[in-house]
Length: 260
Image: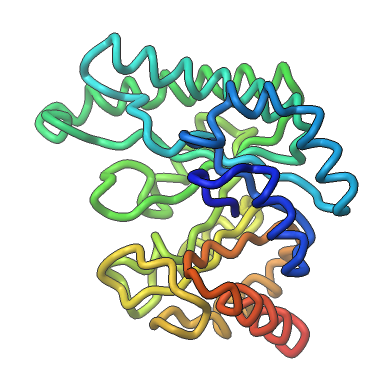
């Protein structure tokens, strides 16, 4: 994944130089807002091709798609819509996005927030279908209140059967260091998983540590993923200034998939 504070073209070169197969493009400002990406579309596509990199896009993170203030909610949904259009222009193989979060006074009127959240999902699914773009909804950490537990996604997928799951190990591990939530995600929704975010943590916050630096049992997780026949994309969300943490994580996971 790119660091959106840095120029995208520089990040493409960095990811390619580390030996990865594709870039997951975080479409966040200041340097990866959809307007900037659209203006650089030809250069980005050329650089991806020259570096033999595939592309997955991650829609904006810091938006409020179920906000109680209508104007903020509408602006947030518009940002997501425009970003989805640009992801298609860039030739992404799939798009990842977050469920709406509960903020402000939302926790006191959770049913209202949920209604807005499902309106947002309905709009995104409809647009993605018209664009023929696979959409993967990511599980969130507990304080998000929406889209946290496997049962949340069971219901979402009944309503929106075309959606897929982007399983985030860091989010699933928060407040559940024994790994029960991760286990249930694979057991209940293994065939729905179409993308993975791998990072480690100590179980209390989303630290984005290298594989093996926290308490997530990746060996057990990889066994379960192989058992359900997982053969899709995997992004390392290891946010460390030392790039060897990324390459070491890659090698560790390669060995687990080869050996289990």
